[in-house]
Image (tube, rainbow, N blue to C red; front, side):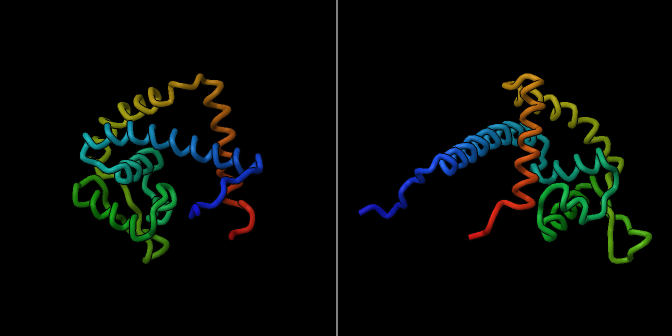
Length: 158
């Protein structure tokens, strides 16, 4: 007697499962490629994500940075602490809320990002080279639609 549930037989469920597997594998392959290169910088992917957000958006409240890189509140404290110890990020007070703190790149962090971001952007371009420009735009539109739907209303929870 098998302990596994029977595979879903309806087309909609089967196609959703197939899409999830293909999407997960594609993300995993791209992330592995980028993370291998990122490891050479001594940064984790989360640390790089925080630096990249600050590099492109400027100083962010810790909560904004947390949402930007999709980590927990404890996780953002840990990441900012590590980056602060490396001299790449500093905390700054918020003038309107004494409880809030900004994270901002230090001059050292700015120099590091100016050095490593162009290579990262090139690696992203190469990793996504399997699609032409029109396909990338179409994939972006579809994935944004999928993400928005999943975040807003993916149906009843079990």
